[in-house]
Image (cartoon, rainbow, N blue to C red; front, side, top):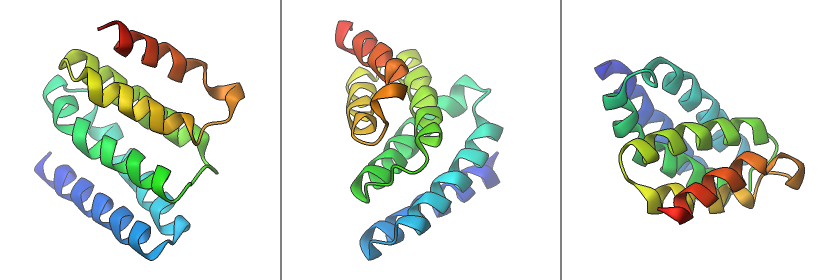
Length: 123
């Protein structure tokens, strides 16, 4: 697990560098790698708690470079963040992440984002 969390940090750093250099594909590739690592960690509630801030950061980097070519990836990241945020009473982070995702996800795919936003707003 420790190795996976180190790999997550490197993915976030790659997205950060891609964002600063304004290279969308670097941010997108880092996000894909990030998701693959999250798949290994998401089963544990303890790990999900530790994933909240990294997932939020990755969504932020995707939003910053306006990377909207992979809405499914963004929805997967947002779904995992929503689950973790609800389990750990991090309602503001969850709502903020949904707001960022709205800017990138086409309207036809926004149903789950609206559902999570409404849940967070009701808390």
